[in-house]
Image (cartoon, rainbow, N blue to C red; front, side, top):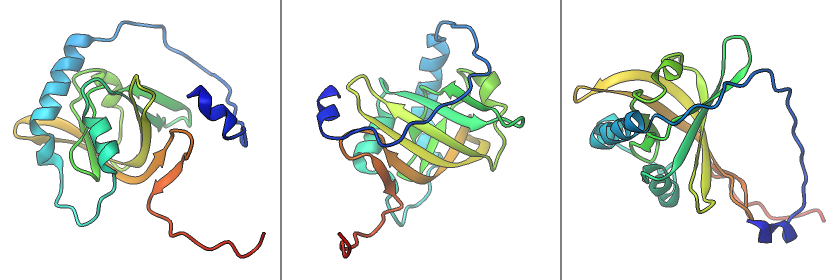
Length: 177
């Protein structure tokens, strides 16, 4: 990661007012593992026949790794952003993410169908990808409740070539220097 600091400079700085944090609490590993197993078992049923690839093969594998960390962000009704860990989130196909609400279910049940959400997935090897999409709601697949996110945009958050990678923007020739 630090070797890329010589390749690019800082071009944008964002800041925020931190309004509230929740106290640190241990990760409910039993619920996370159980939710991940349930998600993995039935996630394909939440998928759709694909006519185009949204996630790259790399990004789909990253989401489907059991050691990846995922976080869902959304804007609450009062306009305040909120972040919830969803370690159990996996790719149902290249265009949809699925997760069982067993871990952090109280937070996840606050999600409203049709709301815009963002999911960041990262690994301890400093690999990451972020997607933005629409939360389609919770539904039952083979008797298991899954939340589904339909992906609209994919962002490569890794150096040295970060930026939006889906939808694909065509290359244009440089005409003005």
